[in-house]
Picture 1: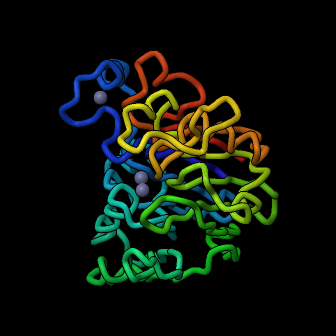
Picture 2: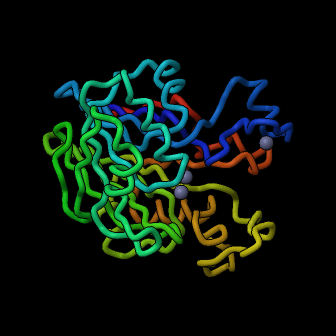
Length: 274
Ligand SMILES: [Zn+2]
Ligand SMILES: [Zn+2]
Ligand SMILES: [Zn+2]
């Protein structure tokens, strides 16, 4: 399985439009970037590709990284930075299966699958496949399992992607606080590569109106506000899941310039063969 990190940024990306902070300035100078979230997974055995989330930067990402167009996609949740690129399907795809969870979100009264169906009803190429969480489905020759995570107020899902032939395993935390349910952690455990939401370092929690939560034994918050993990939370999760390799994704430009381009923070275009 070949994994390409097409988009490793948070909802504004790095550089952020109109921002001249040191981190955005350094990104421009170095020619590195973090566009909105998307991951491309190619099954080299079958030649098929799966796209995880449809970034608003879809067109740019595929031109830049020259990966094949996907045969299927998964949508983790309905926030702009993960869903709103789906309109790019128009006149580019003849047929695309889009997998999304089938559980009703109390916040919207609809499942992710129903929201995708309603928002993109005009796209004849899209076939939505409502999918039960915690049950593997075979997509592009890979076993994909959606797992509920914690991203209030919306439902959101992480996922495990496993090659049934080779045993290779990719896990994604999805957009989540550190408070993932135990049964979801069990599905994500022991990956060859973990992509974990690490939006900011824990010391920035003092600037969030809601502060941090899920503090560790030293009082370091593992959740920033309520929706995302801190760097420290993402690394703690990686440790608990026994991840062989970890990249932090969904990274904001609020990391200081000294930290923003250091390990294990991902940048766009990284590629892993599992
Ligand atoms: Zn900036
Ligand atoms: Zn989100
Ligand atoms: Zn997001």
